Length: 68
Image 1 (cartoon, helix red, strand yellow):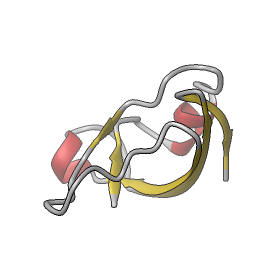
Image 2 (cartoon, rainbow, N blue to C red):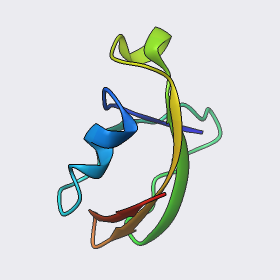
Image 3 (cartoon, helix red, strand yellow):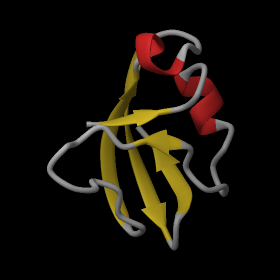
């Protein structure tokens, strides 16, 4: 699962139209894709920021176009 580097889901939604800030955690290869949907979470014990949340982010041309 990708770790989103945002303080909250609200902060993530406020960054629609911008590139995604994330940390790859898989030891089996990159999970990031530039077009499509990514499921991830903020993990405060990893990022040191904010609260834990989960989200589905839709990307197009490396920019965030939606957050669920």
